[in-house]
Image (cartoon, rainbow, N blue to C red; front, side, top):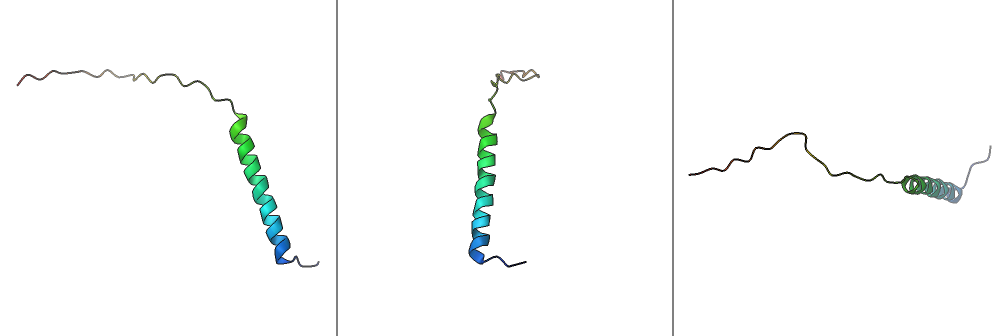
Amino acid sequence: MPQMAPLLWLNLFFLFCATFLGFLIINFFIKVPLRVSKFTPSFKVNQLDWKW
């Protein structure tokens, strides 16, 4: 089995990096974001007016 030259390893590395980045970008943009509803806390906050 012949050995690969260092430039071929570098080309292979760049090919895998480009493929991986393309895969990540496609997966990021393929989802349709859902509408974010306003956050309503489930606990009540008692407002106290202090009189000194």
